[in-house]
Image 1 (cartoon, rainbow, N blue to C red):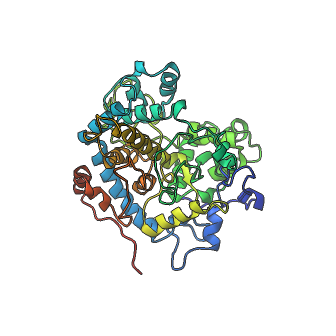
Image 2: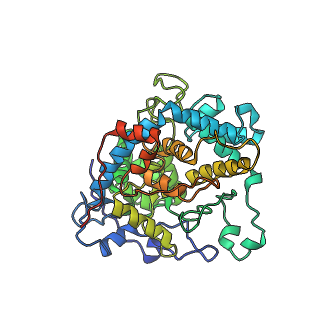
Image 3: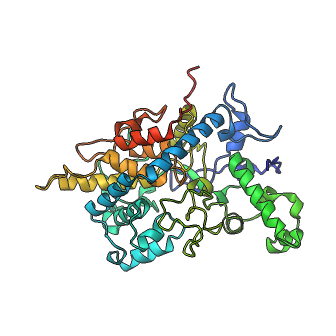
Amino acid sequence: MKIDIHTPSPSPSAMIGSPAQSSPFRTDVLSDVGNACATSRPTNVACGSQAPGASCNYFDTEPYRTNSTTNHELEMLLGKALKSDPRLVGIAQRIRSLTGAPDRMAAFDEHERDEIRSMKHIGGAHELSEDTDTLDAHVLATLTKAERVEYNIDRSATEYRDKPYIVNLERRLCIFNSVSSKANIIAPWNMHAFDLEIYKVTRPEQYPARLSNLIADRWTALLATKPDPDKFVQDDLCLEGLDANAGVFHVLSSLDESARKTLLCDDLRIPWSTEEDILDENDNCPTSPTRLTNPLGSQFRQHTTGARSNVVRYHDPADPIVNAWVEKAMELGKPVISGPSGHALRYLNHYAMCKEMVGYSTSGVADWPTLAEARLVMLANLMPPKNHHSFHEIMLAGVGVTDGTETLHYQHMEDYEDLASHPIGRDALDAASMTPARPSNN
């Protein structure tokens, strides 16, 4: 179902906020991407299937929309080939073992076991808790170990005293290896607000069309289950001035953040995966009673996704990194899902750090998986059909990661040829057998 979006214009203060004084990057406001498109649309770029007069989301403009859609289809095929490759499952298991991550659930400490059991929305959490040999379980085990308190930076150190945005940072605290901050846009920590949770979005044009249409369809389906839709809107949602005909985006704009979260995440279940490629999951039988995590059904992948949980921010007046990476991705026609991957950064750096430390010992690391292989593991763990991050977002996060001998690069941003440097990647390219959409030379 396609929709026309018409909403009352909010006040300027509701559209875009001033950066918080304690941090150079505002994390609680999504920039007015709809307004940015309406006022500064790129030359010779037309909106896609937007209704006449409707504000246009930047990610729905042409030719980006067509090129990124083609490349997303390619990434889906690449991701399917990578996630099911037994060689990568074995590499993920070896990295887990070599980095000293616990080899079974009972070996985690009590707090970690509780955390893992609570991660019902995270791919691999169930398999990890059941000591099952899957790629996602091995990755989650490695990341759980990497985020232990002993790897946290000392934020009271002298070098950070004049950097309040590090001292006050609530996440990404782990020690990292020798990543060049000039080469990697999220090194040494992912301090940028590249995306925003869907329930924090306050204007409907900030949703890309794929998400807007999904929300509208789910809302229609939800109202169809209510004996009295108007009563549901007025009494259950406490919106006395609205009825069911107002439309879901009027409803969302009238709710506070907590109520928006409940409606989008609990009632409409927007973040949950609807991908039916489940062969790599531990229990891949849709009729199994153990496949109860995803409220949409056992036939789907049993986790939430970045593509449905987050909205990528196009513009941040306080952080030019946010602006630059989006512009480059659009220029290349590369899909964006959740911004450059902090998960990939942490995983690759932790492995590089462990590998470098052991490299100084007499045993050496000659038989360890390469950093390029570790990056392939992250592509398999995060790319579509899992839909946590896009190829471009994962590759950007690995740039400059080094174990003292090998350094990761991203040399072919215009296509996917970086995969061809390793047999596993070449096999995935061959399995996909699609031509990527390349940016125009004009």
